[in-house]
Length: 418
Ligand SMILES: [Zn+2]
Image (cartoon, rainbow, N blue to C red):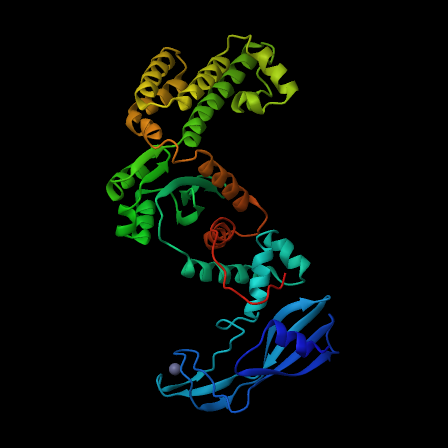
């Protein structure tokens, strides 16, 4: 069987044919060049308007990298024709079915790399396939652009709004997820976490779609609350469990850090050192050893311990069915916490009190929203931005996030190369 036969099986063009195939001797890596020529009597297609027109002249042959095989690099070699396009009234380069724009990689190879980039970091993909980081990046970029253009945008009823920190320092990204039972994915990314950021989302999303939203989950972040009330007032706005518990954990962290410093200064035995995770994790997620250590720690009348107990007490809130009883519980919990004299916890209680209505919406939406979705996405998003992709720009981070979390569609090819 000839290589040409295989190529015709996996990737056949209407107006072009594979001609000669040769082993290139003068390169370092084993390389095969596949010459492509236009089919007899076929007229070139204008790359600008898509109309066929009379040929004008031919350019120098160009190489387009194809999917490598058995450790051999494969290139298509083709001398593009120029079209004297009647519609554009200009001379244009012809459109080539195996490549998009001015890329040096064939679409097939770019999709191949992009698919691998979902499983490995960009650097790893470049290493495995002996290509450059730039080629991998541009392949993923192409896949994301295609996917964003072809994504299904109907039937979006529930969204979750989240923010993640990226880079060092206080730089944020706002992420909007679709969290419907039938479809969970990253919908949109914006720079920072300002009013303007989220307004950008609603502008992109469109008025009609915004009005048919039924549920929105978010943190208590003021700019978000403001924009949601303005742009999607018909939806039930829920403050989700993940973000609330994150606030409580942050308060405990603060209490503990201060107390550790005080105890040290007073020369007490360091009971609180290395207890951070004991206090932040759910008790059921602790190892046996950690559980013993926690039990030991709880004997002390420390502010960190009392904060921890308040937090664990608050977990009960989420088990209610009726908003009424949940509300009563919340009020009691807030009163108790306000009496605790622990300032970071009091601050959280005040915040919860202030957003009582939105908190209780959790119970009005119950059964239709899953609390784990936003948290799951948040973890994956952090991992994606942290992973050694080697990117520093916002654009690269954006592309990586859409690629890994966007559940973007791909063109339906006849042959899958892996
Ligand atoms: Zn044209």
